[in-house]
Image (cartoon, rainbow, N blue to C red; front, side, top):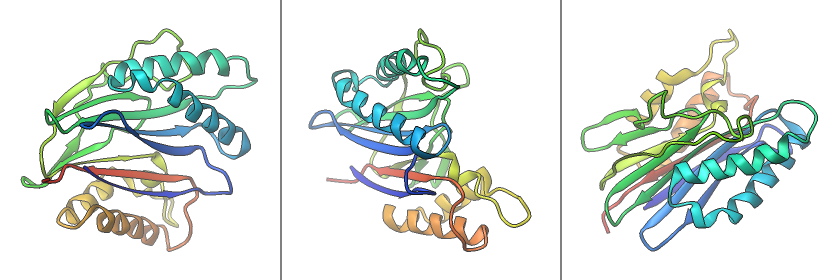
Length: 225
């Protein structure tokens, strides 16, 4: 597997983060999260989530079970705080031994899956009925694991909403379609080159300044050994 990422916090601390979990010689987990809000409060919740992830590593081979337990832990803690706060998350595991992608979602933008040989880009197969709510809202929610094939040359792109919601001077957002077009246009390049191009295009669209929101994107590709 080849993995590349770009992470640009909007301020000194961030509520966006990602984690790469080596679960075995053949299975890798990729988690991306977005904590509601900005500033120190979000950063503290981010630290809490990171610590919980390590505690739940034994359950991390099953995305649905992993998010279910993570949600239970977070809900019991966050309900003791004042005010509403929640965490969106997307979690995927890639098993190179059986060429499988397994995925679960909690209120997060659905990642895109690219079949490079067919130049076909589409969301990961996760229907609205399979996608769960954000973490920290419903303590007894059971998250569902979706599964599909993942073969050599395939890519997945996981991201937070800061990229899609980046706006130009007229208030128009970059949006899904421009995001998709960029990924497809640079599908023949390396993961690093494609992410550099994506970030550059989003910044150019917004007028060349800085991102107003935290930005995090992680791309994964299965390559020939």
